[in-house]
Amino acid sequence: MNTHRHLRAGLLGLALLHLPAFAERYAINDGWQFQRGAAAPQTVTLPHDWAIDGPFLKDGPHGGMGRLVTWGEVWYRKQLDIAARDSGKSIFLDIDGAMSHAQVWLNDRLVGGWPYGYNSFRLNLTPYVKPGGPNRLAIRLDNPPDSARWYPGAGLYRNVWLSVNDPVHVAHWGTVVRTPQVTHESAQVALAVTIDNDGKDAAALEVTTQIYALDDNGKRTGAAVATLPAQRASVAAHGSATVNASVRIAQPRLWGPLPQQHPHRYLAVTTIRRDGKTVDTYDTPFGIRTLRFDPDLGLFVNGEKIMINGVNNHHDLGALGAAFNVRAAERQLQILQEMGANAVRMSHNPPAPELLDLADRMGILVLDEVFDSWEREKTPHDFHEVFGEWHERDLRAMLRRDRNHPSIIMWSVGNEVGEQYTGEAGAAIGTRLVGIAKQEDSTRPITLAMNYAKPDMPLPATVDVIGLNYQGAGIRSLPGQFPAFHRKFRDKMIVSTESASALSSRGEYQFPVPGVNSALLRRAQFLFRHHRSGRLPERPLLPVPGALAPRPAAGAPAAALDLAGARGPGHAGALVHLR
Image 1: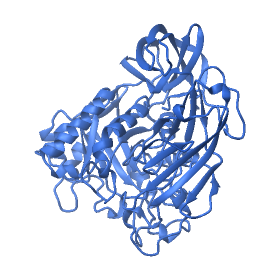
Image 2 (image 1 turned 135 degrees about the vertical axis):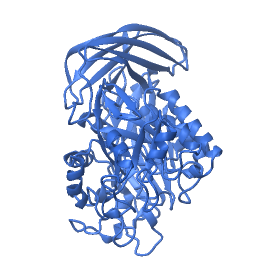
Image 3 (image 1 turned 30 degrees about the vertical axis):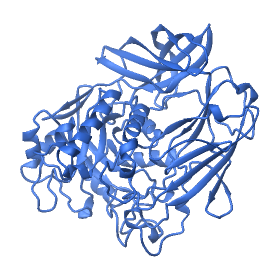
Image 4 (image 1 turned 90 degrees about the horizontal axis):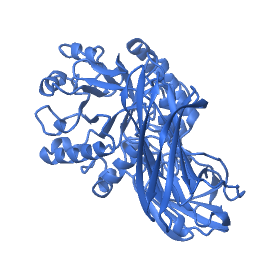
């Protein structure tokens, strides 16, 4: 769920909006000047994927990234008019996704940047802002070639925000909701709130939080169902402090996946007061639910066994490109639910925050994944180039942004990483990543999707849940690995993190899983089938430029959704197998 301050959409630069005393967060998606190379600037609205406009590559190189040019230096520029009354406030730029190697300037001064194109990040603009006049914001992106194994998109392809805060405010992604004790009669809700003080003086604060029920559309309903005890906090100048409180909610409405359960949600509204004056108000949507991972019986949500029928879903929206569109993503999830899917693996990177909001609202289980590569490369310019310096910051960023979403039931720290082949050295990296994840969130298990590692190798022992890509059922003529892993790790659940596309388009297609593997998989049934809408099907249902395909008749010819967003051949087959 998207933890945020109260939002007010508006275009800074066209109007100076009147701010109340506490924080505001503005979408600044309109009126950007986009420039690529020597071409004349053009006005664009974010989210923006400049690559989807073409031109198409008639000849290589293209590979798995498709035949659209996604690489090269581009600039986005915008004027921000910051009101004089905002002098002394803390002002931040929040970027939900920039593809990639972003660098940000304000008033011709370098503010900072972030290389990984899939993560959300915040930059502090305060030292560079000139209140009372125009401010020149410039963002340079330099997406490299050969950076991915799929279409990555290009540009500022997610939302960009401006946050204007009192110097004393809830920190970025600064709330953590836990529900350590849950029954149908009562639930304990524990909330940790981290407060930053960017001011020159220490601040004595009162922190209060009220909890409200949300309706199915995410709207607050009625009076508060619970109020957490007020907390006192003293935050040093240029320091931070965390306050903790808990409360019990009687007869809680539990969050659970459709169709067996219902995705009920709540909203925690935190107010910070200084000398009796409100300086910040912060909203944290959340859900109340329990999870149990049984190595023999599978997943239990709120005490009920849930048979997981999942899909792997890449971040693009087919012919719309990578620019995130809430309705297009909602429609995609609706079609997947229609065919019987109840879970999505975010393959193989952090998704747009709004996609997780949709999963919360629509009752879809999520496996949230951070990396496709570690130190060992898959393509010449993928994440391995910055892994050493950035892996901890990127992993913590995803976990802190996403940890309050009830739809997320598991974290994945990698997909088919080359470190499966490096023995103890690879296991050491796995151990380090799992340790970081546990520091940020100890309530969910950690997995790693493995297509090579065997039970006697050191890497599988580093994770809580065994994730197997294809090899669980057996790849082509190779024997299935479900029984061997189950014997070795009797205390760990096994997840089929990636299984077949239809028509053997990825090398194997087995329903049900044959031989001795069938009983184990049917008993635990945690299966993510591969679904890649970002590749051109062999026979698209609508005319689509053939240049989008990496090669003739490539991709997932029986995907549930084709590149045009229509129901593909795999949709009908999934209706049989998943419902």
